[in-house]
Every structure is written in C-alpha cells, then in structure tokens.
Image (cartoon, rainbow, N blue to C red; front, side, top):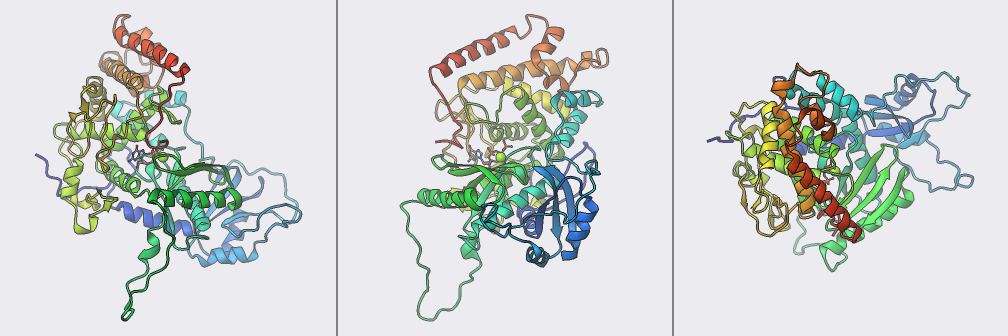
Length: 544
Ligand code: GTP
Ligand code: MG
C-alpha cells in the first residue's frame, strides 16, 4: 500500500525519465509570482525594421529592466518587465494620447504602447532575431518525422512534450493579458484580481491553447482587516441581486462592454451569459490569445490547482497527458469547438484515473490528497468540499517504475476494454462505480460530485474513442516486431499520429480490427444523419 505522506520532488519542465530538477512551488505561489511580475510589465509594438537594441535602450531610460523578450504577434512586439512599478508611470508620463479628433478613439492610459521613430528609418529589416514564438508548434508531419528519430517510445513522448508545452515566455504573456484585463475591470472594482486558470496554469497547457481568466471579486473584502468600531458594526450598502448567477451575469456583461468598447486590442467580444458557467469570450490581439473571462468560478480555479499538483507529482504524467491529448486532437476525438466530443478536461481525468489504477498506483486519489490536507487547505465552495493538500512536499513519490512505453500501450488497452456501459470514472476514490444515470460516458466531477463532466459526449463519439484506442493498442504492440526492420515507416507514438488507415493498410491484415473500423463507419453515418435532423449536443460546461 502506498502512503502519500513523505517527500516528492517537484519537476518542471520535464525532459527525460532521469532528468529531475527539484521544484516545490505551490500553485498559489506560482499565481502570486506571475501576477506580481505581470503588473510591472508593459507591451510595446513598433514598426518593422527598428533595432531591438534601440528599443531596449530607450525603454531602460525609464527604469531597470528585469526581463524582456521580442515576438511577432500582430506586428513586432516587445514584452518588458521592469524591476519597479514606478518605471511604468515614468513611461506613461512621456506617452501621448493620439489626437482623437483626427483618429476617432477613446483616450485611455494603459500599459500597451507604440514606439514610432521621429526620424525616418533605414529600411534594413531586423526580422531574423525576433522569435515568432506565438505560433511555434511544429506541423504534425514534422513532429512525426522528429518522433521517428527517438530511440524509444518513452523518449518520443518526452520529445512531444518539449515541442508542445508552454514556454516560460508564453506563460508570462498569459499573466500579462490577465493583468491588462484586470486594469480595465478595476475601473469598476478597484481591488478585483483577474487570475489565469485552466491549461494556461495547470501544467497541461499546449502552445496555442486558450486563456481562461477568472475575475475574482472575493479579494475585495480581504484586505480590510476587522477594526474596532465601538458599539456599532459598520457595513457597506450593497446592491441586492435575485441570485448569484444573475450577479455574475451582470458583472460579466458590464466588464464585457468595457472590454469591447474601451480596451485596446480586444476584438470579437462575445457574451455567452446563458452557459452553465457564464463567460465573456474575446480575442486579445496584442498577445494573440483567445480568452474566456468568467467570474464566480472558484471551483474551476481549484480544479486547476488539483491538476497542477497531479501534473507535477511524477515526470510521466505530463508526458502521457500531452501525448494522449495530441493523439485525440489528431483523430478528432477532441475538438476546438463545443459539441458531443470528449473535452481535454475529461480526457485528462481519464488519464489520471488510469494512473491511479496502476499497480502500484502512480497517482494518489483525491481522497488521499484530502487526508493530507491542513486546516489552511480547507476549501468549501458553494457547499462543495474542495479540500486537498496544497503543499507538494507532503506527498510521497510512487514506487511504480513502469516506462511510458508500457503506460501508453496500457492506457489504450485499459480504455479499449473499459465497461463504459455500466461503469463511471471518478478520481476521488480512483475506483469504477456503477453509473448513476445512462449518459454514454460518465466522469464524476471531482468537486461537484452530483455532476458528470462528460454529459455532452454521445455514444458515437465514445465508440470512436474505444475503436481507436483498440486500434492503437494493436499498433503499439507491433513496435517490437517492426521497429528497426521497417524504420522508414512512422513507428511508436509517431504511428499513432498519422491517419490510421494509411498505416493499417500496410501493416494490418485486412481482417484485423475490421469490425472496429466498420463500427466507426456505421456510427459516423448514423451521426451524420442525426446531425441532418438537427440533433446537437453541447459541452455541459460552456453551454447550457
Ligand atoms: P484546453 O482545452 O487546453 O483549453 O484545456 P482546459 O483544461 O483549459 O479546458 P477548458 O478551457 O475547457 O476549461 C478550463 C477549466 O475549466 C478546466 O481546466 C477545468 O478546471 C474547468 N472545466 C472545464 N470543463 C469543466 C466541466 O465540465 N466541469 C467543471 N466543473 N469544470 C470544468
Ligand atoms: Mg482552456
């Protein structure tokens, strides 16, 4: 039996099975540090052709620069983090508001600046050293080629992780985008905080993933410590609302209007207030992020912390999650739009559940993490117990030594044969239970336990997942026989990322897995005709 009470090494980023660097930051520390740095940061756009050295020289007149980087977003940009906030005021002091009578616009002093040279520029382009890191994910064909050069499936998974995980710069930019939106929201709520959550900070973010933002109004009361007020208690008047949901919708609606009308660089603003979790969606042009702003969504922030802890407990977790998420996206198991598809969040829960079920377990159950919690870890949100240990140093490392080669194959075997028709998945106890209702896929919400996070998934999508899982388990089992003999063909993880029909024709006997493929075809025909009849299912999360 494993006891999760000893020491663990916090590892991030991860490169190989053996490369371990100690890191013990809690999620709260990472959030606080990221937001603090972001508040000292400005974003500067400038015309192509100006030397970066000149930009830095000029900006450093306003204060010591802590860190900086250049990138190609909507034109060339520099992100500059000062050592002191005062340096921003100094830059703002010299910045002019464009003449609104000639260029209609709304005057606003923000932390987004444009530098325009007073004299005419030499035309020598300076593009080479600007890293275009915003869209650096390598195309899948190149990734497949790269993976083929690795010497084991484990190293293929680590290689994919290194290619796709968020870079330090990308994460800084995400905190900065939150901080810029916070500046706008503070016009109404001066002490509010806008925090990133979801894959931007839960350690499973892939380059290009959306930016989930949480407008936290609970910080407002926190700074005021109870003071002695004599014989009376003094309280602010507050506007009463019919429900918390209505309050959330109104707040988001107003902030959404501000973002749409006054926030420079925010475009395509959409109010999605009727969703189960109301949100404002917009594109933040200066950073290039697709953003979802929510409020009163503390449970999701807590889920992000839980995933962050799981992602950093063992070097294999993130590598496996990235590989399976990438596989799922390549084959249309997950999608960037709402619909009857398995979401990344649900898929991650399935992987965690699988890892809890290895012998010995690679990950502790949520119940075990709860047993390790201190008084300060106690979180009851909206009546739901969201308590678990937040200090990673209290969690023991697993004794399981299975390689990623084995785990990848076993994942597909496990879910290729899982009894989805009668069993549900839950990471609280790490055990299957009988399904409480007949949704095709039932994954218990770890905190709001009466909810199924995959209620949107239809039978057709689940069948596709199962058929592909079986097919991939079969393909991985061919590696030992084929690798080396037929090295021009994608192998291992690479073979799973190309259309399977291509590989299958060459490697599989025609009858092997034919039944699985026929089932997939029949189901997609069925789904097509259902769609024609107007049937639509949506993610339980984004839309009601
Ligand atoms: P990406 O697909 O990379 O964006 O992954 P993500 O984890 O950021 O997922 P998404 O943007 O859909 O959701 C953001 C966060 O909201 C997740 O990480 C969860 O914490 C939470 N979340 C998403 N879907 C659900 C759901 O169905 N139920 C609950 N309770 N929380 C959810
Ligand atoms: Mg997200």
